[in-house]
Image 1: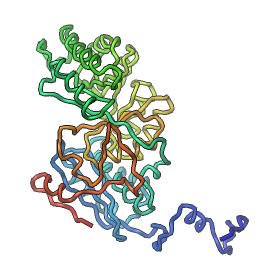
Image 2: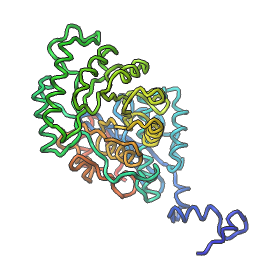
Image 3: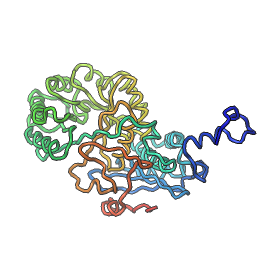
Image 4: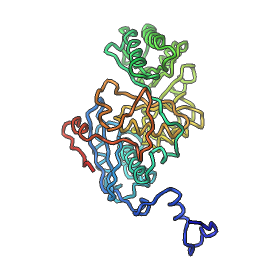
Length: 412
């Protein structure tokens, strides 16, 4: 076909701009390039992993199904059921519009933050899988294309003796040498035996000394074979966080995560600006609006959104774009099943300022059995070229590990 571009705006021309756009995108579906496909149903099933994973499926009248995942939380499946009438009959390709539609419709349920945003994100992730399958492109292509073929994974490590520095060092050695990770993380808000009152969030010198011992043992053991981060889970006062961060400045700490409670961004900014230890936060902040102050005021050195929690794939992309204005990198918090983990990796492939995606289930032997594909190899995720997320649920494994009382969704 030879096109006369002067005819593109001529209503009597044989070919119109709409025809050209469809051909350019490679959309040849007999159903009008997907524009007349409608959502017919939304279903959830909760899997009893190391967290209660909420898997979400969006069905269409074309027989194409998209699978996503919402961050775990009480009431998420019920909220998704509430939202079903707002998306049934809609076109699944209109991801942004449907997302904003759900935010507006669920405003009475608190769609600024919390489990309502998480529930909406579960549908949004499933829509990316679905749209990718309709258009026959990987999910990263819907986000603008990819910067990298592989996304780095950092492994969240635990030991039965979390307060023992040498036990932590041993676990770090095992993960690096036997599991192939070159990026790991440990909890640092562990009891030291020197606490007088844990409720007041204050760290005594003996407690700080104990945490330094853990950091020294782990970073000394792995050396330059792995980057090592440490998580404080929002536990300390601003003053204690500053003193802890200062005490860690001489060690090779990848980042110190969530040292203060998440509500007061002013204190977060103070802690970040008074130390050379990199400070990370963000998993308990929702949507790009919630992240704005953290990023605009450079209150973090690294921002850590949890993709299925903060609002979904496109919202995480928007957060990453905002962070990139200040040259702030992104490290994704992640406690998801293979579905949510791959969705996070798809986002990670599509943003320039990506560091790594977290993996929180290395002790769960059947984690990867939930899908037919292998997700993590040698500490990274290779981004698949299959349409959508590139994951296929193993429904037998889902059924075997469902939360009591759950019903398996339709296999279509």
